[in-house]
Length: 149
Image 1 (tube, rainbow, N blue to C red):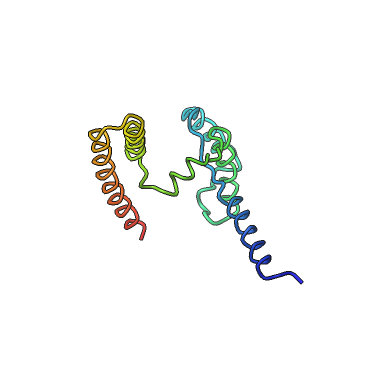
Image 2 (tube, rainbow, N blue to C red):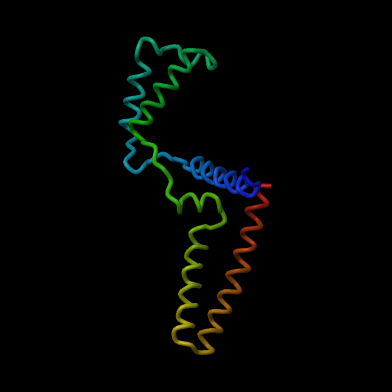
């Protein structure tokens, strides 16, 4: 007979696997996107005989055809790119702006210097920077989370 703890463990592992599968998100890669080429390809689609009146029926069959053709042109010019782990992390924590990340690096550098070559002045400078940084980061996090609630 299988124990309850084994079943719980297997369920937890299954949930972790499902989360890792569903967390893979994508975004459009606009690094090489050329608007002129995109618009010319899109105008070619719009000038075809079978797509002249697509905008009339938004819920109908013709509109779906137009959306499919639009997505094919968009996929041709702006490919989907999978987000990296760091991009996923920063999207899940929107208060981590570029300025806060730079401040974190500065704080860590000050800590390393104060530990490597200890002096009371260096450690005091690190402590002051750390305290002001932590209070600012907490305030920003509160503001951002209040916007989502």
